[in-house]
Length: 213
Image (cartoon, rainbow, N blue to C red; front, side, top):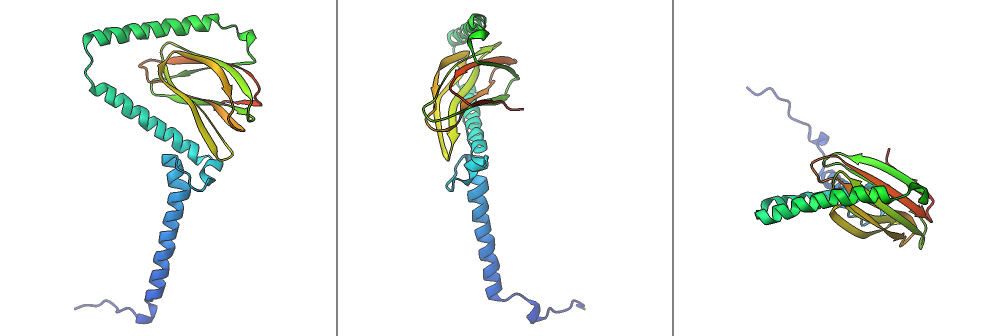
């Protein structure tokens, strides 16, 4: 025996209502994909809204981390001869020496600001300068205790740029010229097996130093 109550046809949604609900769901899914998922996960921002609310920068960092992880994975799959391993060890020792020597040679009083931070293995951080278009900022940063990967880049007003990148670098110096008004600076990641302390020295034409809390 079947005791279920048969639904009243008048209570069921019509074909037009079903099509309308399906259309609304599809439009909502596309909007979420375009406005949230693409910028925050892949750094793709077709509307520009993601960069305004900070999602695109999050996606850019995730893409960069994925590329670094893939590159590291590929390096681990390539068997290295003994000669290359010895060379790598010598390079690491040389990098440690260069970083320490550079840190000792930099005079803090010569610079407008100085900031140090320690990165544990796999950890990354970012520091940016608020700059107007065409402004120049001189910098030196030094890694002590190991080497780091870095990306010197900028964003602002819907624009973004990557000035340069480096892998397993003990230090870098130069003059950062802002391509447009916005935030310009560095992202560092420690791909070493031990803690690395990075010290940044800056001076020049910038409004503020943006340090993560």
